Length: 196
Image 1 (cartoon, rainbow, N blue to C red):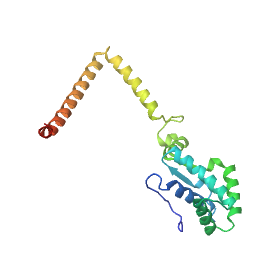
Image 2: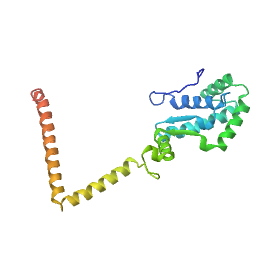
Image 3: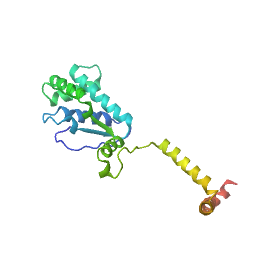
Image 4: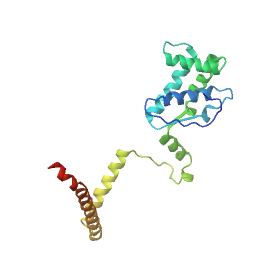
């Protein structure tokens, strides 16, 4: 599966086994004879759920390899795979598991968002952000947007320049909406004959 060590990107539909394949790849590199440092290995996923699942599977697979047996066919495949690729798997895995548990800050399985947030936190000025910045979620962003919009609209009633700007905006928006509705009407008019 991994005769040459290189970067890998997996793309497939849900339930196709991406997390399993990435976990297997991560463990292969972690257990590799080249002794790649744990902190040099990264597993990157899209969702928090997938990142948590991958971390959990790494730990579960380490336990599985130490046990060396299972009644589950998929787990037996994992055991067979690592036994084929590594000699003295149990001892190697015990050492690596102990190292991992004592160095959890080096266990780099992230979402894309959390990975880049950690980069920004470590080099804020080079990244063009202020130290202590915060990334907000979509719900909080909407709350802030609505609050700012409410304040702007309240002030627009008191200031003639803002009111004029808002009026022009509404007229332009109304004109676009009318044009869109008119376009839809004319596009479906030929079908009216079939309906009657």
